[in-house]
Image 1 (tube, rainbow, N blue to C red):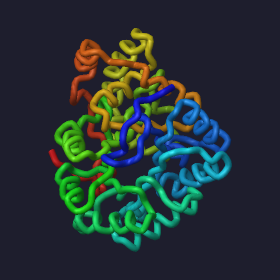
Image 2 (image 1 turned 45 degrees about the horizontal axis):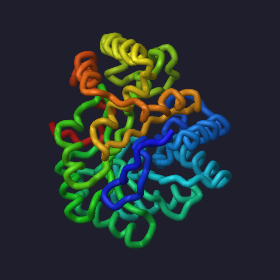
Image 3 (image 1 turned 180 degrees about the vertical axis):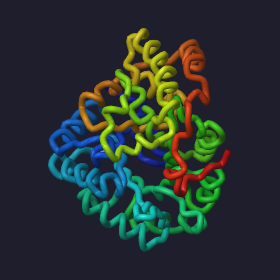
Image 4 (image 1 turned 60 degrees about the vertical axis):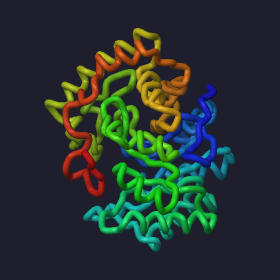
Length: 329
């Protein structure tokens, strides 16, 4: 499948407008293994999905190690992004210092079997560290040839503008999907204005926009969704009812549910790049043809009736999950 080719930020490498998020390889949503992960990456390449996103804390290095072994074995031509700044603790904290970012970057390079990455994010912004200082550090990494560009994650539009004034931001990664619409209140537009890619994580709502419904009984102990407000009752049942209506609508069109949900995200602009994740090739194949779906104005109007902005019951994170997430509305 040929996806639309877009820039990863102004002047950045050309990538397909659909990427792949590798968090699940670290076991966040259930057990996995190297063979299954390799088959999933094979399916991504077969689909033409060559923008891969990971982070040092996904499985505490496991996801990066899987990617590194795959890249060493198969030498794929991909655009690679990783992240650092979060220290799990306890307590969880954020470190945006140069020493920490460089040390974590070097660890990521070793696990990924590379000597540079195309994109390196500050995974969260430490409010005690001026974002201008973070931008200066990132520019230094660019000048040293360690990274192609830098990004920010879970930040406000004002933070992006301040950082961009010091050193151009290549990408901003925030949660965005049919049930998480906050970036529409200024962040997506700010990125478009500045020439910054907006990378949408969890565009399938942590599994909710699949061919079958998520079931709490299938979630293993430790799955963070078990304590997430949208996945706890009575919110969970209410959200299932809304999304089942969308599921029926998409399937009535002859589309996969995931494909339709991703087509909606991509329709928000050429700079909007969703990065769905999965552990298996089977699930990836549910959305590999998302670029074939062309939503008409009538389709978009019908979606807006089925899933209006703000339909989701419950906040996207609980208070215990909000460390260093910038809120601006």
